[in-house]
Length: 229
Image 1 (cartoon, one colour):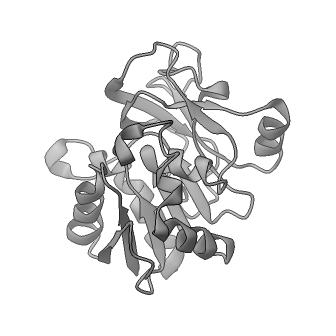
Image 2 (cartoon, one colour):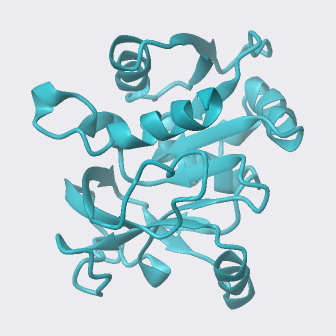
Image 3 (cartoon, helix red, strand yellow):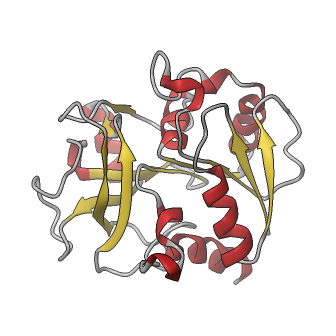
C-alpha cells in the first residue's frame, strides 16, 4: 500500500508518521510537498501534526489554501482515504472535509501528555483492530477542543461517526478524563462516507516498542488489515 504524507511549512510530525509507516509497518510512503499538485498515485493520504503556517489566523486556516489541498479534497470527494492527525485534523475541518471545528483548550494552555481513549466505533478502516478497552495515546495541542452545533453532533451520533472519546484508564468516559473540553469527550471522528478520518491524539507517537507503548500501532494495523483482507 502506498501512503502519502503532506508536508506544510511548520509540520513537525511528518517524519514520525513516515518512520512508522515505512520502518515499522513496512509500507511504501512518499512526502507530498504542499506546493505540489501531484499525489503520486498514493492510496492513502495523511495530514500530519505540527503548526502549519505557524497557526496564524487559526490552526489549519491557511494550510487549506495550499495548492496540494485542492487535490487532497478532490481525492477525498472521489472516495480516496484521507486522515488528519492533530493539526491535520484541524486542516480537515477548515477544509470542510470533516464537520465541526477545533477550538482553544478550555485551559487556554498547550497540553502535552498521555491520554486514554475509548474506541466508540471499531467498524471503520482505522479502528477495526481496537477492542473495548482504553488505549493510551499522547496529545500535544493548544486548539484541540472539538466543537459542533447540536444538529451536527446529533448526526455524528446517528451516523456512528465518532471514532474515539477521551476516557480514564478503565474506559470510563467522564468529564475528568476530558483534557481540553471537547464536546461529548470527542477525540476523533470520520465523515459520513467513512473515508476521511481525523483525531487529535498522536498514534504515531505510540507505535514503537522502544517507546514502551504500541497502542497507536493498532490504527495502522487496522488500515492494513482492512485493505489486505
